[in-house]
Length: 371
Ligand SMILES: *Cc1c(COP(=O)(O)O)cnc(C)c1O
Image (cartoon, rainbow, N blue to C red; front, side):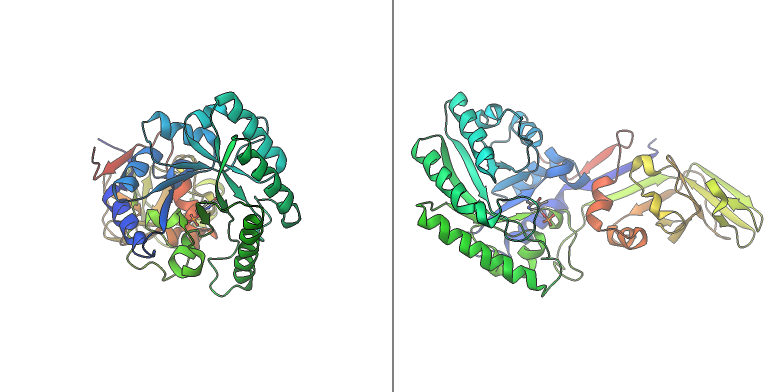
């Protein structure tokens, strides 16, 4: 009998990918972002489901993530956008993994590896349009373009794309988004002046895909919304959350009024009551910040965690309601509590809640698997 599990509904993933396609103009391609183990949902099953539903590309952060996709037999285009300087790249190039370059040094490492792999690298040139995170600084962009044009001429690289990433697309109307879009257009014009006409231009994340069609260009990179969550309250109403989190009550007991509960006694019972022990804790991705706040559905309604979240378990106050060992407690499900409820309770974002949920000891169960 199971004790705790994370369930992932692959039909929901397919539904979301198909729904997201409907946001795009014909010809605009969709990249499903499956980094960080598909935001905690499981990279390979999610990648396969997304491709079944019509995703054109897969996006990941690290090369190891991209290689895992390839080694599992996935042949769809894959972009990996984050690697450290001394990482050898020929294995990725041999496996047909597209790479991002944001500096001349980065580009040279790619072209040297391409020569070693004896095939041109597929490169996405990244411009920093205002996030101040990845991407070439705008002042360095012309020099990068010049080197990229040379690398293409030498047959070491195919410049597949010019791309960038938005800082505040999840805040509708934020003035930085229009500034970044204008800077992106400038970067594309500069590329053109250097004779670089990439097949793909891409800028949009989930928020921009859902709300800003002018940012879609040739390809959108959608992470969060694939999983049925939205970065903007109310946007993407047809999305279906794919993850639910379940545990079975390990112990039930009656305690008198005034008893301290869990480490530090940060909570004291307000009356004689029944406490239920739910076997999931911060070792399984339940944020410790959810102490005395996190919502859990148990015995017919949503209740609160009382006292500190421990490594392996939490305590739920059930009042006078009947609850038995073995009853199912649900931390996240479509009807609530949702990842958004947890994010609110823990002062974080839904991204972090689902990405961290689960652990090596918590099995992930797939619903709707198709081979
Ligand atoms: C994670 C990531 C995305 C996906 O963002 P969402 O908001 O989850 O859609 C897109 N592009 C880059 C560069 C990313 O790092």
